[in-house]
Image 1 (cartoon, rainbow, N blue to C red):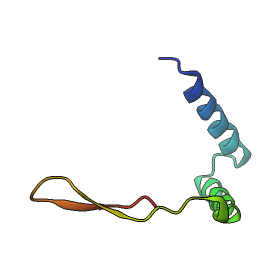
Image 2: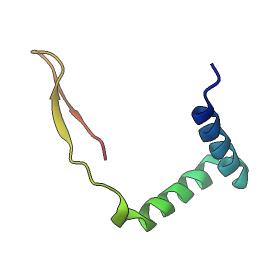
Image 3: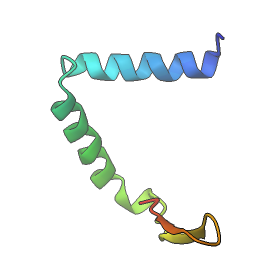
Image 4: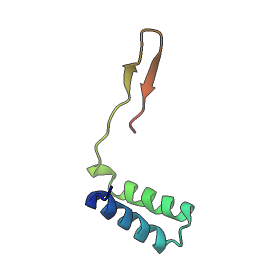
Length: 63
């Protein structure tokens, strides 16, 4: 399957990773810096309790 949106995202991710020589720690550090810089613009979502079955419950963390 050749999806143009998926291809664009992969291209962006590859270009971003290449800037850091594919060093995962450096890539993550950069994303953390950007997240902190734009923290006020990001939406905060509270944890929601969801019921999977009558026996089991889990907490879905979206933050």
